Length: 267
Image (tube, rainbow, N blue to C red; front, side, top):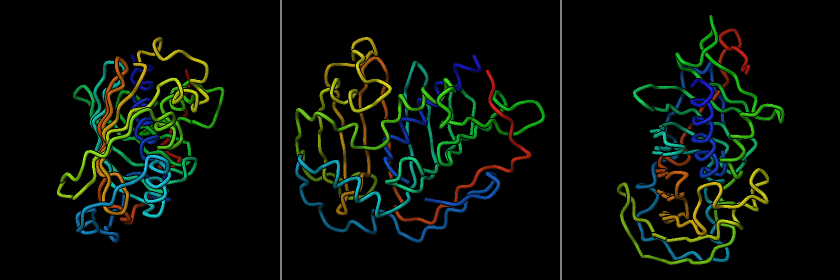
C-alpha cells in the first residue's frame, strides 16, 4: 500500500510538473516557503482580451510566456489510477524541466502529504512515508535504477510541448473569463500515439493498453500574455486533471529539507 501511494503520488506530481512545463527558486529547510508576490496576478496583467495564437506555434508561444514569468502558483485536481489528489503550491524555474522546483501540498483519501521537488529530487513528508526517526523521505528521480523514477518520467513528458505533439484539431473557442481573468479558450486534440512517441518511457507502446483513447482533447485557457490560466484534460481510463495557474512572477523560494530530517528511499 505504501509503494502504491508513492507511485500514485509520483504520477500526480509528474503530471503537474509536465503541465507546468518549466520552473527557478531557492528554499529553506523545507518547512517554510517564502511566496511574496512581486509579479502580480494574471488579473492585473491581463486587462484586455488575448489575441489569437496560431496552431503552428501554440505550444512554443505558451512555453515562452511561462518561461519569461519564471514562477507561478498552482491549484490542481488530478485523478489517476483510481486515486484523486487535490494539490496546491508554487513552482519556479518554469521553462527548465530539469531545474524545475516545486513545493505543493497534496490531499488524498483524507490524508495530507507535502511534496518538494528540487532538480529531480523529490522529498515526501507524510506519516505513512517517513522512515523511522525522520520527517522526510528522499526519492532521487535522476537514478535510472529507481523504479519510482520511471513512474515519474512516465507521467512527466518534460514540458507542455509533449502534450501537443500530433495536433489533429485546434479550435479557437473565443474569449472567456476564468478565475477573474480574461482568457482565450482553445480546444486542442492530439493523436495519442504521436504524443506517446515524444515520451521516451512510452515510446513504442500502444495507447489502448495504457487505458488511453486514440485522441486526447484538452481545454486550454491563456491570458493576454499567452500564459495558461487553466488546463483541463480527459485521459480516458487513466484519469483526468485540471490545473489553475495564478500569481505569475511571484517571489518563490524552494529548498531541500534539512538533511538531518531526511531518510533515503528503499524498496
